[in-house]
Amino acid sequence: MRFHAEAQRRQEGEEGRKKRLVLLNPPGRKVYLRDYFCSKVSQADYIHHPIDLVFLSGYLKEDYELELVDAIVDKLNPAQCLQRIERIGPQVVVGLIGSVSYDEDVPFYRQLAEAIPAARLFLVGDVLIERRRQRLAEMPFVEGFVHDFSSADLLGHLRGDSKVRNLTLRRQGVVEALPLERPRGQAFRLPRPEHRLFVDRPYRYPFVRRSRFATVMTDFGCPYRCSFCVMSTLGWKQRPVGDVLDELQDLGRMGVRELFFLDQTFGIPRSRCLELLAGMRQLADRFGWVCFSRPDLLDDALLSQMKSAGCHTLILGLESGSQQLLDSVCKEARKEEVLQGFRRCSSYGMRTVATVLLGLPRETEETFQQTLEFLRQADPDFASFNVAVPRAGTPFREEALKLGLIDEDFEVMDQSGNPVAMPTLTLSRGQVAALRRRAVRGFYGRPGYWRKRLTRWVRHDGALLSDLRIQLQQGYRLLCNYLAS
Ligand code: SF4
Image (tube, rainbow, N blue to C red; front, side, top):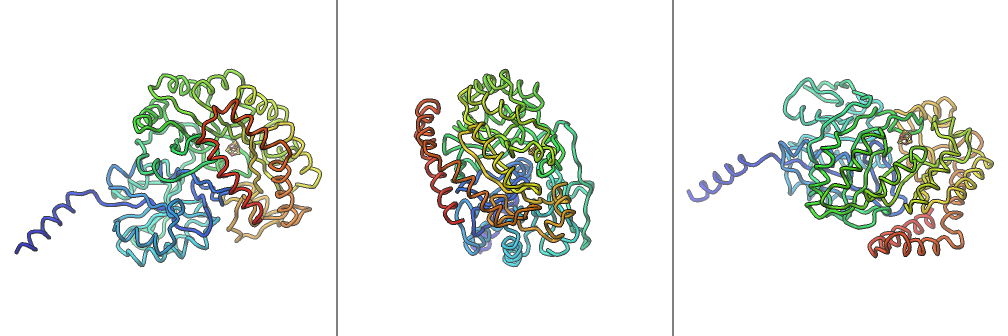
């Protein structure tokens, strides 16, 4: 009788609770970043908060008790990860999947579905962009794919709304590819993300200056048209400044003082950006932060406002030293403007990170030398060397197919070049890999580079010990990866 009453009480307790939903970054043999439709292997050891899951947490917390399982960050193997999820016993799992780890992810999700057959499973990731219907048909254990994590569509579907979009769904056994929206600059509102799930986990990023940080995004997609970049295919929409400031205020109350703005091009539109910066200066808490932007956008007025609102580091696309190559991928940037942008940032005492793109179809030894020279002139504090990858859904993929550089079914790819995704018209994959290694060695192996970094850290970076520790850790991992390659 007593047991019966206890069971009844437990059942009543369960009924009173919200259903459980697991936000999942699955395990992997390498440090994979699978978020924002742009999966890759971490070039050092960094892994920032998966923005897809951060955004979705804002919507899903309304109906579900959320748990985050990040097997990469928590270093869980597949068995440990399955055990952890089984213990939680979720009704729904929303997981990341990536083209870079596809061969590991699909078998893992199959195992997960066998372990908790009653859970509804949804996936989000770059590899799902093409062949949506066929791919979902090939994964009968998955209920649907999410193609816009900034929208409320998944929550709508879970609530039984039949008029949702931006999903691929299995409904009554039939696979449906629902229409995708590609916004053109309009506003969208995002319920406040559940940052508490993320900020105290051991996420790490080389360009933040404190180990405890939050990843925030004020828009979605990008209005530029760079043909190699998946962001150019997503459309572009923006959050109201007031919503972002409210979110920052909450983070301040949680004791967070460091931010990674994951906007792909921070600074557009200019008026909204200036309003945000002015609002940030009024907040009770000051933040240090890093963001992505374009060097050609950064004039003196904008940079001085960014600096006074706490920006210390800018990650900027340098891409190539060949104007012809820049034009071939619709970068819409003149080399002179790029150079001026880098120099202007340095003159404001802000650190710069140049992203370099090697191995475009018309790359040659000569264009490679031009890039090295251009990089020397821009003189960034850090450089990230990527190789061109034919990402799903991009015009660049179509071009690579047309030029015969890849096959139709080519999917597993990694911009860190391990292995190189495709040859150029004149260079083999091995030659592109060798160029990348030379570029890394030439940049970080320069006599005086590390002395300059240390001097700069003491003079300009405020000599934060946490900053030095982060840089040394990531520098060490970069060196290990370089030697391993
Ligand atoms: S500006 Fe940057 S994020 Fe935007 S499409 Fe070009 S490369 Fe991508």
